Structure formats: C-alpha cells, structure tokens
Length: 221
Image (tube, rainbow, N blue to C red; front, side, top):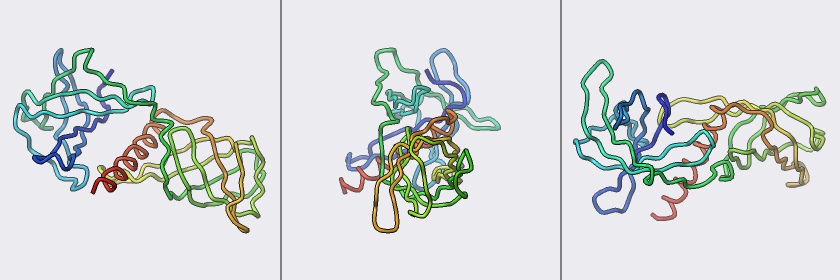
C-alpha cells in the first residue's frame, strides 16, 4: 500500500499524553519487513529529530484512493550513509486502519486563488477561498463577475506546505455548482473539482488534514 516516494507522518504522544508530536518523512526504500525513511522532521520546528531504536509511532499517510490510513510501527535500525535513514516495521495486514474518505473533509481556509474561464466568458481574476476539501472549494467573488452555473473554470491555489517550508501551486479544472449571495457586493461560489492530478489532490487533502488537526489541538488546549 505504501510506495517509495510517498510521504508519511509519524505521530507520538509526549510523556504526559497531553500533546501529539508530529514528524514528517518520506519512504525512500523498503525491505521485506521494513520501510526505509529519511530522518523525520518535526512538523512545527522543522528540525530533524533523533530517535532511539525501539521507539514506537503511529504512522499516517494518504492512500491513492484519497483516504487516510494509519498503522503502528517502530524503529528497528538506522543506516549512516549519504542520506541517513531509519528502518521502521511494516504492519501486519490486520493492523492497517482506514480512517475516512479525506476528500469529504472540508475546512475553513482563506487561500489566494486565481480563476480563469475555460470558455473566456469573463476576465481572469484573483480572490480568496472560504473553505476547501479534496473534492472542491468555495470562493468569494465580486458580483460584477458574471458566472454561469455548470460551466468550467481553471483555478490555481498556492498551498503552504509548512514542513517543507515551501508553496505548492495546485491546479484544477472545476465546475461551478452553486452561487449564493454573501452580501450586497459579493457572492459565494462553490466549485467541484472536475479534473485534477492525483498529486495536487493529495496536497490539498493533506492541507485540509493539517488544518483539521490544528483546529482539534487548539480546542483541546
């Protein structure tokens, strides 16, 4: 289920179970019994972290079906090379846990978005999102921009990838599915992704997952 090049999160409760630390890494190789990962980076501090052999984690990743998968794992060994790496155990079949269809996880988010008409029905414009999910996005539009239901638009979304300290520019072709009034000057337009690459969808889903996690952590604190 996991392939070389896929990104995973390693989660570990701190000593008093009051907080879950999240570490980010990539599968760089595998053996019969282990996945080989690069050294994990703490999601908040962006610092590489040293772990003892035998350290247990809960591993989380996004599958090709856009669902979240979780499994228990532990560090079995480390390798010092040009790219230092760790060996973590592969789970037994019964240890895989499918959490949910991530594309239906919608989060509030204000992201800059560029919008172009596929049929050149209006001039390109930029605005912000109201919310986003792996299946679509809601954007705020000025009323003077005349949009037509069920037509297609091209959109570009710059997503902040915190653990890599970079911006991922996701592109999608989307269908206008609803238009409703927000106030006297603006509308809220819901867009459903019509055509999007697997990589861009996964980055959007990962962004939503991170936002939802941040929200839950704030509520707990």
